Length: 422
Image (cartoon, rainbow, N blue to C red; front, side):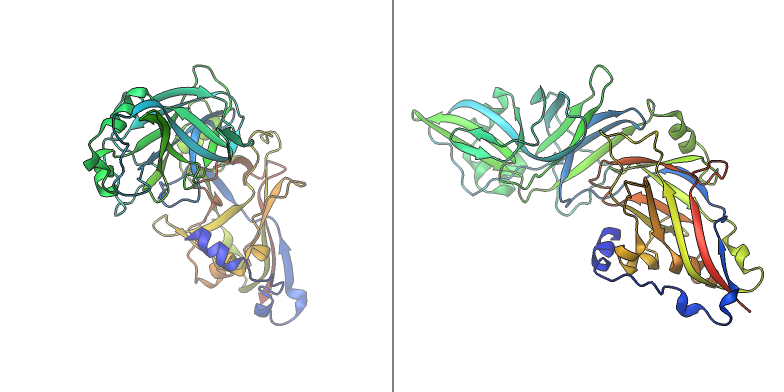
């Protein structure tokens, strides 16, 4: 919902007059402040629905700051047509899982992929979340190490295919599919009852290291499971497809090897001030920003907010070429039930709202005048803000940010231009 709102509003033009229509009286009453107290704290993300994504993530990385993350996929396989037959006495040559690779986050080091057969069915009527799991046969169909290809086309026979990961599966599984009754191949209802799907994950490496999370285009014609076999002395192939299949991403985050500040903040109350805060994609970490004393501006009468700019510096010591900062962050209000609520400034469009990473100044800036005015007017309840990565369900990026602790020279700050209406 948040991403849809951002997309729908991004075509709106910047309105430099936000808040100015609220100003009345002598312009000498205009004042400026950048000393608003901001209490910042890292908290864990709530689970999110991870079906129907534009891309799916698989991999494992050992981040020197954020610890270990594993991304896995549970997915059906489908028939490309009904009443499939492999002919008389087919003989297996090989069976290969192919996954079209769009990009990666981390370092493209050797990584071990494991593939299992799901024993619990997927349903299009069910909701699957980033922490959902399904039962699977513990005997792997593949336990295969490689350096994934995300850049170069691959020639298979006489055909050039888009960059993809190729994982050979066990011959016994290939023979199991080839020898199955034709009744299992009449249609996808029969087939998904026979083969529930695949669980695709990455194994932690025996030694520490970087490695990566890979972004996959699973609806691509390149992605699928291909049987290579011989029938009546003729080489043949058949591809099961992921296109149209029910699937979801599952993410796990292990902060035991992360910088100790993450575990410390996760174990303490959200209203404890932190000098640095942590934002992580793949439904990892977000930051809570509280404005406990914002109402004090009303002590001397009504206030009209002309401009409110939140400036957030990235920690330069934590920036890493292998783990670049997210291109965009999003600010949302915290609801009374701790839910996420769109703030009015987001609806003004991205050119006004901001949140784009400035690589030159190593910072993010947000314009939140309407939100602050709502706090002043009492039309918005003050439960604070959440700072999250845009596209966090598929975006593996992470960043360390300077928090609200004013003893930190680069601390997060809110610049307010306002008018006292007397």
